[in-house]
Image 1 (cartoon, rainbow, N blue to C red):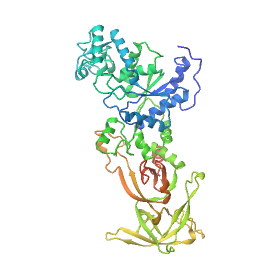
Image 2 (tube, rainbow, N blue to C red):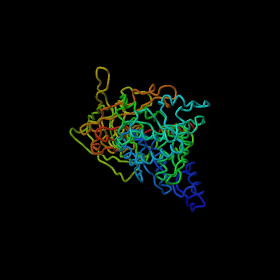
Image 3 (cartoon, rainbow, N blue to C red):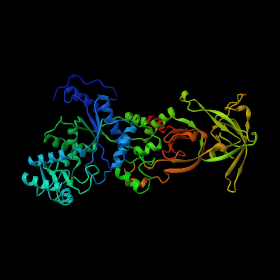
Image 4 (spheres, rainbow, N blue to C red):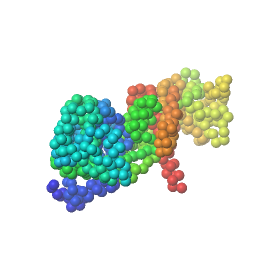
Amino acid sequence: MTPSPHDEPIPTEGPSDFIREKIDADLAAGRFDRVQTRFPPEPNGYLHIGHAKSICLNFGLAEQYGGPCLLRFDDTNPVAEDPEYVDAIIDDIRWLGFEPTDVVHASDYFDQLYAWAEELVGKGLAYVDDQDAETISAQRGGFGEPGIESPFRDRTPEENLGLLRQMRDGAFADGEKVLRAKIDMSASVMTMRDPVLYRIRRLPHHRTEDRWVIYPTYDWAHGQSDAIEGVTHSLCTLEFADHRPLYDWCLEHLELPNDRPEQTEFARLGLTHTVMSKRLLRQLVEDGVVDGWDDPRMPTIRGMRKRGYPPEAIRAFIDEIGVAKTNSTVEIELLESHVRRHHNAHALRRMAVLDPVKVVITNWPEGQVEHVEAVNNPEDDAAGTRQVPFSGELWIERDDFMADPPPKYYRLTPGREVRLRAGYFITATDAVTDADGNVTEIHATYDPETKGGQAPDGRKVKATIHWVSAAHAEDLTVHLYERLFTDSHPGAEGDAFDSLNPASRETVEAKGEPALADVAPGEVVQFERLGYFAVDPDDTRTLHRTVGLRDEWANIQKRKSK
């Protein structure tokens, strides 16, 4: 290979971590003269926040070092793969803000992978085994216990080559034979104990259709796909560390078209109150616990998009947690803090009432409608203001009124004056209740001199509440979300599903100001005093609570510092 022209690591911008330090050292030593990465998902499900970490790392490194990053679909198992997932993965990556240099598939290399398998067989480094999967697994042994060699291990290369070709041509039933690497049944690393390279599966492939009846395993396709594409740094999560010796072994015994890539492992992302296992996520969907892969309670990219998590916040969160060598679990409140921070700067403010009770202003001129001026975003002067209709009948939150309040309750109560956001001062006079004592209507008076929320005599009030004009209200359906799992580490002790939260979603019929009729699908707005809410992509009268206003992460940090 041509030596690198760089005697020192290439100056780069961005975070520093052990992977970037390794890349810098590789470039300085002339191990590589470029950087190329890839993101290799299996198209058997939707991406989740854990995948986002790998996406940001691989595409971020390529951008930082001026190299390509491929999206490669690891489509070697036709059992669960589907074009639906392929399209969704491409869409989610682009939504996160990245564009693959190219989109490729492991199935693009099936001919070359098979040719290399014949090459291994010819060198006496692979053999066809007639044993079933259960027997092979039982013979693999355990840690400190050597495995048992297959009785078919010593077949001649000629015999193995003939059997492999018969496997390829469909002469055997599913599971009747497999191709295994011939390495070491006493190896301390279990993946080196004659791993399976090919298995028979008579299933149509979503790209190659019925052309193949044998399919390569991940371990056989992974490193060779990297080599074919010219990947320099193959980045995997820590569970693949035990697969690295096999990754290297396969590459060492083949004539490669490019420099041999290197695999490096990093810690996967864990979040509190969350499961990342595809098996468990699929179970949530199939058992009807959630409404689908895009349910806003799911940690999928689709679910987070629907809930109103912006890609900028996800990327900022991943940048902050960084890249480590040890698995750990990050508090979900940190992710929510990034989401909240983004929306605080960008989201328009609107008023909505989630649990409405009517206020009748008894001294309001009958039939009169005024408009008050409200700020769209106090963090952004360019967002301007809007006109909000104000009338003699309003909706307020039920808990913003109490007929018999406890101490230090400063909101509306008989004889107390409060400010209506951007409106007037009002004073409650009495309330109407039903047979069960529930308040059905509140009567109040207003001070016409306080329009805009200021009293000319300078008097102060202790509470400001939001409201919606009853005659102009938009009817809304609002979904309020809590943690899907009550345990911070679901499944750490027992079954994760034991901590499912039966109250993870509450749906309410709400009232919103007229400006909410103009929000776009997917747009996020702040309901004043309540939190951030995302407009459903298919129904602009349905909104999903993204996060509340309180920064729980800041409170966690305060507790930790004590």
